[in-house]
Length: 359
Image 1 (cartoon, one colour):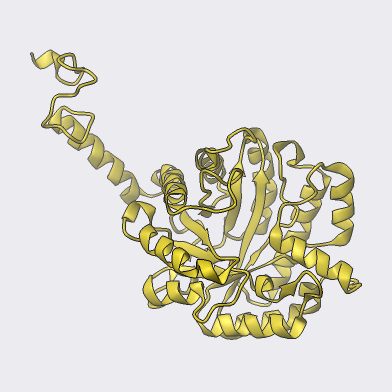
Image 2 (cartoon, one colour):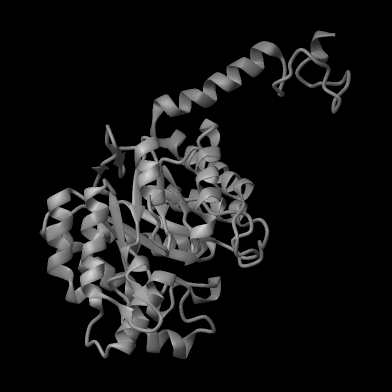
């Protein structure tokens, strides 16, 4: 049984885990302060329609702004918001500043951030294995920052493990959950369930238990690119966490460029069916084609993720299944499979199978 708990929002909490419906997360963020206003517009556009409104958002900004995007979301929308504090404490030249990192963690916790992602498993020994056995050793930006910092500063263990006690103290004080980032999630389906993928998952399980022993709520990030049969196999290992799971994708084919929202929705629905997706990450269509994600790309990604979530939720919750039942009843009552029931269907003309027997 996957644990359930609540993430804090501005006025009410958001339940995640098996007791609650599958939720949808949308990532936003900027790498240049000049893009701030465009990202605000994107956030507002997402919430104009229920179909494109996420349950959670993560601010993955790598630059500081006067009012952070995460604070704007917390102040204006009733959802849980997460961040990746390493992004704002890292430089290519010096790595991660420990004092700054802890200051950022506490500042964001005070502002109401509900969960932090930390890549505790960014291990140089795991990187050596990945480098030896993979064409793409890793695709995690946050994990890469932690690894690079370890190299620059000759750390025996990564800086997050060095700061483990301080991080635990802050998140406990402000009731913030920790999401365990996955540095070595597969960047292609051929790497799924390879040695480093399994080793990192096992290390995540150990860290998850250590955090739980401290009374901290934990979310699991994992997966990445993985074929459908491997999703089922890996699900058995993921269940050992006994914590809500937020799979990244999973993307079950490497051949969906321009349609990644569809591919990831398929993988997410499979993960949910195997009880290993409590939060679905929305993936935009051009995830592997463009460096800039447009407003419409973000909307399409969230919509696809919400369809995947709903497809699994109807199997678990009678009240959600009733939504589909009511749609079916309305179609039957109106003898129409389309919303514009008062108009003749141009596809079937006079041969509509719902009406032909009444002629």
